[in-house]
Image (cartoon, rainbow, N blue to C red):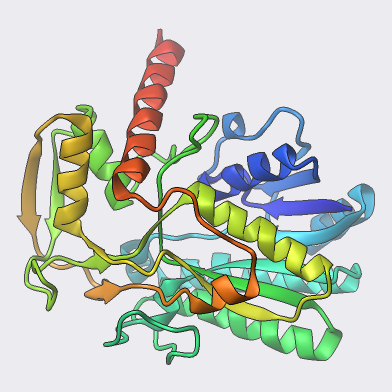
Length: 332
């Protein structure tokens, strides 16, 4: 049994690779390296450069490596960018997922794990949000992922494909062993941006909006450690392998943290103060998104290990320091 991981050279995908390799799984990566990095991939894992939209390539990989399951991470993920380039997001996220599903079904794949997002909920008005809440995304990013979820449901009904959809809330942190982490230049993830500012890579950081209907006026999010998230994927894979039913699950901790609280944690954990500017709201940002996690705890034997915000920040800081040192050595 071999697992195909799309987008495995990216932030979450590379953590998934290490998780699977640690568990003794046979793994293959498909990534076009548009935002990923080869150095994040374990050296023992076969790498194929290409697009999930290339049906012939996907079918060749499945046949050559004996793929039995697919974990699909490959996607564009920046909300403001999706507002500026909606067609690019529908092309990369929705149309490429359609092509991947088509190739998978024609190749006899029966187990599919889809990387989705809490952005499918839009502005829910309720917290914590359940999986059966209305899905009314307010960004093309969220819509592109919701369209992919709908395709997956329909493909399952027509062809018997079995799936788990995992809706991520805000993913942060890094591998505690520092084998991989968020390496994307000019990333927009709040904790990464704050950590980069704390170590001096950025002169300052911005807070986008302080007039939201939240306790301190800044957006509230449910931050989940990336290592806990990939363990949820492993549990989802085991669920499908044991004959578990199709399901959609929130991936979070059920606890909201504001932007200002995150910044305080980074300052406290790093022991450094840094400049923070207040900017206007960004289009596509809901005031609050916090997960109801009752279903994932009931369906999967998943128990997170890194729920403390300062722990998430500490791992992210350690990774940023290592990444900065690596870049200096490459430039030397």
